[in-house]
Length: 118
Length: 115
Image (tube, rainbow over all chains, first blue to last red):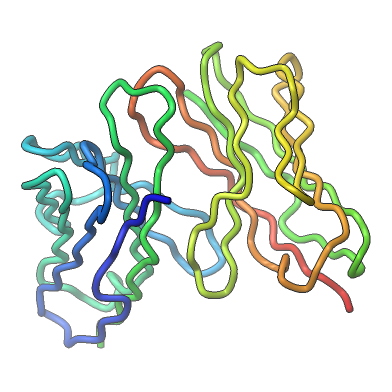
């Protein structure tokens, strides 16, 4: 089946550092990718939707300048947490789907990134 | 706006028994998909089962089956012959059918399997 690779799986860094998380579709073209944040024991909260070659659409309450999303190709989207602070510590998950307007395309999830800001 | 409600934060079932997880949703659309995802402690999101709203027949995947009641907007998951490896968070999810759109997740049900 389709595979989505997310890297890194775990990152620990100091406050003020910017952290980049990559999401790659390995065997299909992902026209749309989604970025989620998950707090402990809670559900997935959609942060933004990114379409290849255009600006990401952010959900209400998500800071665009804090969470920079780039979807430069059909197989790669990146989420950069800029000037990260301890409150940004969380589990981040990406998902990808393979076709604008294609009915039956499921979303495929990456394995997530655990971000810890000291 | 579409919403997904899982009213059972936690459930427990004896190994080898059957358990049903509840889910209701709200939408004004007629074309959509419903999903159950499993998230074990590894936090990987695993698709358990999928149902297209236009299909009347309930989806089944081995020990997992759903009871899809479109008029009642209900989508429960039945796990038969529960196994220790079924212990996880289970998320019910909704997605509009006609376009490449975001998935809306319920808050989840944590399932414990008692040996």
